[in-house]
Every structure is written in structure tokens, then in C-alpha cells.
Length: 276
Image (cartoon, rainbow, N blue to C red; front, side, top):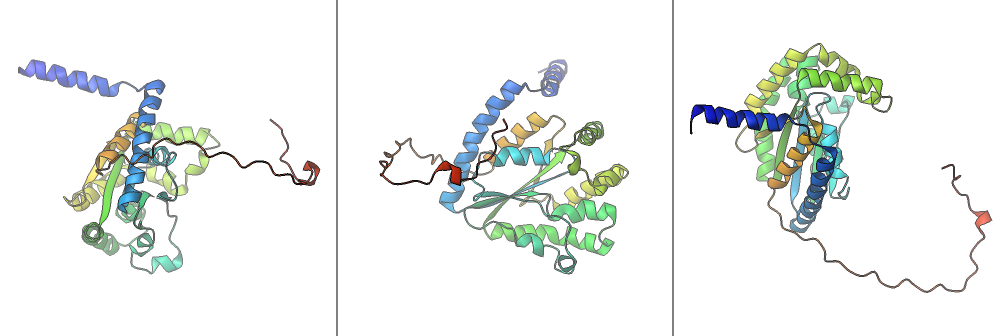
């Protein structure tokens, strides 16, 4: 194959990736992936698997959107979200990983971490919420901690959502303009804009120390939200070998016959006003 032809094919692939996904195609593909996610859920229950999925990335990179897409069709008793806030005074004196251990999955569960113990490697390091010694100790101990989880039988999957500075700027401004999304912005989010390069360096150092064969990072290109969601969910499904345990269709049993009884009048009940 000539270099010219090879370069032409690369350009076509790049152009294809740059095209935005239509809403119709997105919904069709997401519906297919939802069916597969339900199959995965039933397999996790059946095999008593323990699955952890970590979602990390810059503010407004799309972590919450993909987590919402994953969970909207699943049983919250099987698939739950962990999004921890600021550690309490007591938690700050504990072993760093201790408060995360409390949220690890039991058999038959999948836990989605919306940010995780990697806060120390990026947010805490850049914002000065931990000492340099605490940061270096995290980079040393994190791979060992994750290997220990994996040896215990936990399936650990880690995603980093990568977004360009221009796209992040657009999304942050959109949040400011939308009253229903303004709550997503914190003081730390706003301060992080001033430390863009420091965040980039911290992220690179984190990947260099914790992207190990036993627990690799998977980077999701997230400038296009719909494409990122489909790609991430599709990859997640490929990370666990599962079988279809979908129950066969069945008929509803007949409803119990109405028994003669004196039911209380409606006037004795409080009804929600029918405004709409």
C-alpha cells in the first residue's frame, strides 16, 4: 500500500470521527447497548461477580452523563453509584483508602465511582489539599492497593474522560447559563480553570504511575458526548465476558376477583391536585 493511499485512509477515518452522531442513530445504538447492559447485570448477579468502574476526568468532561446512561436501565440494587463529597474531619485522619473500601461491591454488585481515590493524585495535589508526602505515598501505594482488590476477585475498570480546553469552556459556560445545571459548578471547579496546565501535568504523572498491566487506564475521547457515551458503554460491555440470561416471555397470572366489601369513600383520601 502506498503512503499516499494510507494517508488518504487515515484522513477519511479522521473525518468520519469528526462527524457528529445524529440523535436518531444515538438513541438506536443506546437502546441496543441498554439491552446488553441488562444482560450484563443478570450475569453479575448469577455469577456473584464484584465489579468496580472508575470514572475520572476534568470537570464537565462527561463522566456524569455516561454514568446516567448506564444506570437508567439497571436495578439500583445491583448497580449503584458512589460519589463521595469532602471527607469529614474523622475521615481525614483515617488511612486514605479507608472510606472508599466501605463502598466496595459485594458479590453480585457493580459499583460506579463518580470520581474515586484518584482525587488525591489530581484535585488534592493541584489544589494543595494534601501534602507532597501524602501525594507521593498515594502514587506508591495505589498500584498495590488495586492489585490487592483484583486478587480478591474484584473486576476493576478505569476510565479517564479527556476533553479539550475549548470544549470544557463551552460546557462550563452552558452550566452557568442553565439554572438546572448551575449547581454542578463548585468553587473548586472554577479555581481549576486557573490551573489548567497543573491539572494536565498531574494527570500525566498519575497515568505514568498507575497505568499498570493489572489495572490499566482507558482514555475516552469526550469532546462529543454522544460518541463518548456509546464508545464507553460498548467498551465496558467488552470487559466482562457474559451470557444472555434474559428470562423468557411469560403470561401474567389472572387477577384476583373483586370481593364484595365496603371500601372507604374517596372523600376520605387526600389526592394530589390535578394541575396538569
